[in-house]
Length: 123
Image (cartoon, rainbow, N blue to C red; front, top):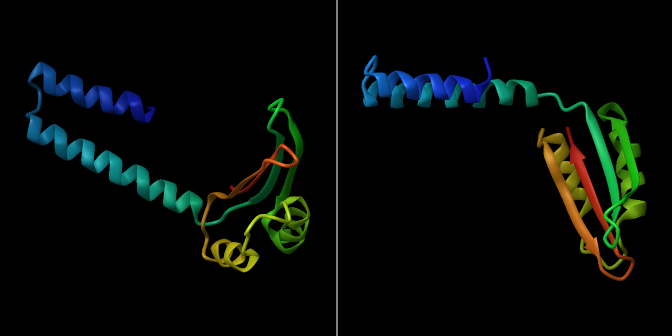
């Protein structure tokens, strides 16, 4: 059952009087906590390092590279080639974030001169 459906089921149970609002609140809190735990468990091992370069004028993707995390050092070097020289990017900070298991978007820079947006993700 999808998370939204589970929430709706709990709210419907409150509305129909099957459970109290307090019990519903506890159920919703438990549902939220279990969702966070499962997301954390899934997120413990990122699998992909992704670099995406988008043209700001057209919105089209110019570069979209997916690299296995096992090759992250290569990915960092490739990503560094696309980051604008004027950007204040600390690659050591990115490396630390990667080693700590951080996931999601770890870099988002817009280069107005070249009309490009560079994004780096860990998924």
